[in-house]
Image (tube, rainbow, N blue to C red; front, side, top):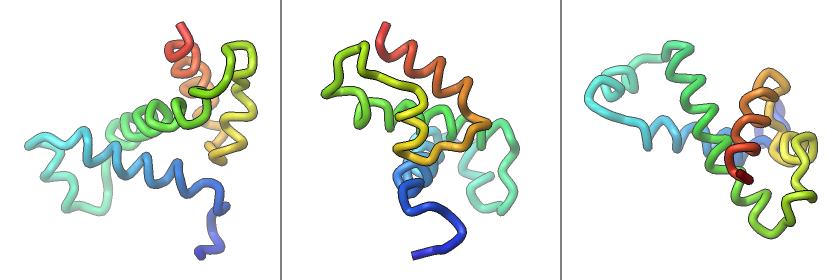
Length: 94
């Protein structure tokens, strides 16, 4: 197991990579062969990864049990994505 990342962050990392695959179109396919994706593509993958993970966290909870901090802690989502998590959780429960 890699020591550079918390084990609990693996679902987020996998969801992030799946998001790259899910969003692939002809223009994106060219980028998949490079080592440097633009921040725009990385942010899009982060947002979609969060969208993929929310149901795993929230589906068996009442709305008042859904907690931003708990969600982020569960998947070790970086604090820099707090606003994205807040927005996506809010959209999910609305």
